Amino acid sequence: MRLTPALFDHAAALLSELLGTTFPADSTVSRYFRLHRQLGHGDRGFIAEAVYGVLRRKRSLLARCGEQPSSRHLLLAWLGCLQGLNRRELDAVLGENEAKWLAQAKAVRLEDLPPAVRLDLPDWLFEALSAEFAADEVVSLANGLAQPAPLDLRVNPLKAKREDVLARLADDRIAAQACPYSPLGIRLAGKPSLARHPLFLDGSIEVQDEGSQLLGFLVQPKRGEMVADFCAGAGGKTLLLGALMRSQGRLYAFDVVEKRLAKLKPRLARSGLSNVHPARLESENDIKIKRLAGKLDRVLVDAPCSGLGTLRRNPDLKWRQTPESVAELTAKQAAILKAAASLVRSGGRLVYATCSLLCDENEAVVSAFLSAHPEFVALSAAEVLRKQDIVIEEDANGRLQLRPDRHGTDGFFAAVMERR
Image: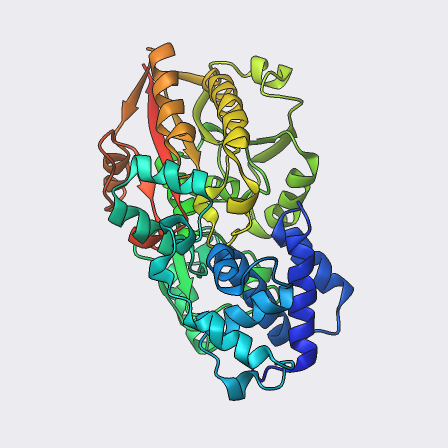
């Protein structure tokens, strides 16, 4: 795509808005595009890639640009220093004296910068990861998180087979391949618009990261069972659980936010599922939970978390989260896990998961729960998946820990437990 002043100005304007707000980047970007409907698919793709690229590399770009750079300069530095555009390619948008300034920005030696700056992490997050991983692992992980996420799809087994979907995508000249772990996963080479594709409209496919798909296989629901997705949100995992149940049994989709559950309704209509029962909870202590105590076969707790495992697609989170916000979340996670566990019958399964990489939100929460609830025992996550022909390693405690640099997925943690 040819870089024009108008396109550059849109990207700079949106970036300025993102840097000046505390709202999530995805909602801010969506709002901007709604206000500028004249922008085509390609234009939107460039603008989104540019602003997210700056957010991913903001700290090292700030080091290149000097104190209090404008959004315009940050964007130029991203294009010139990280995307490799030369003077001729940038000529249409370079202002007076900016060519010399950009040359100076390119000359900055990243190896002379502190590690946290070089890896585009806030100091507190760099220190937290360094306490958990070896130095080379932190570098690998940070670099993985700084890459754009691919577009993953999940096949709805009630409506299609993966090989047939791959064949249809190939016929439509959409480059795709089977995901390495999820038996229902497909990874696209690019990011085509699928909202009007027949496979999407008829419910044969859904957009879902492969790591998120694997959580459904850890729950491993069976036909006719009673199952709950305790923090269902917009229902991506709910739809997978319902499909694995072959739409038989009863599947509760719980959440405390009505707007999130509302987003499940059109997806549910496409899916062909008839066993899903969405329900809003007032809190984790809602009377609905008490009525179902000890009755459910399987419960998934995809707990609200820092989201730091999703930095590939939500890079603004690393600049918005703090140690204090994480501490608040861990208290909430413990309360939610305790409430969800009360639903599980004897012999039933409980899966706790987050899209975080921090021990405080993951292993610490699970270990504290198991210590306080000896009626629950941990199962090997790898063994649960192996019985479904999914081969993937686990950590030393038998938990699933997915990473973008190792597995090509978002960062996910999951622990599988059983009530004895």
